[in-house]
Length: 271
Image 1 (cartoon, one colour):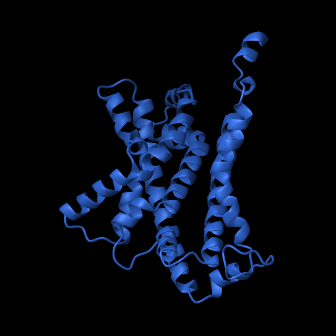
Image 2 (cartoon, one colour):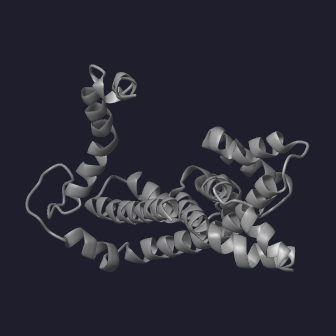
Image 3 (cartoon, one colour):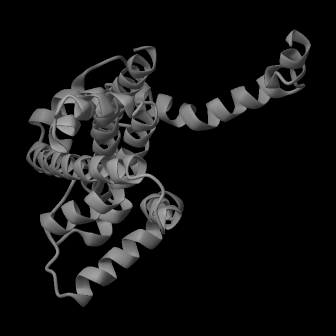
């Protein structure tokens, strides 16, 4: 067995380490550059002068602070609503898909839930915009929320369904044998056991909604901005150092959410 595990250890292949370092550099070097230069005291984004928190102070007190604060509040509000609704729908969908047993069109249903993960986001954005225009729905915060809910459901569904698949249905059967109703068995037995997966799904849906730009840019109304679209609008006028500070703050929030989701799912596996 030791020979087989060594033979198929991908780390032993020639060039694996170099390819790994190359991929990590391509992925994270731009983020590292943005983070470093967000602490630059210079007005130029290309010339380093000294370490300073000047641009972070500018984010909260500068001439553009009101615009970015409103955009950040919009992003937070949309992400909370979208993640909450998407997680609720994903929990119900996972219950139906996994606890309902085999039924017709089960594979098709799973494919429909997973479809937003495979379809290019630009296609989803255009289709959503056409749909809202076809039904005469005025674009604004509500259209962004609805679009984000639909897009976030599969991201919430995956960790929730993975958690539910690891829970034996004997717990629910035991509750039913003790004269609990199906609703009680779900709310008092299954739902608490699913909590780590639900929390992980909520966090993933939250960060996907918070960081989304393409769909938001298509379906938002005039005068409505989220933080990603506000950053994009500011960049079109030229990259300023305060944009790097905002981007770094948004990156930090994303990293914290993903890290929290990882530890939640890790604790889920250890319990």
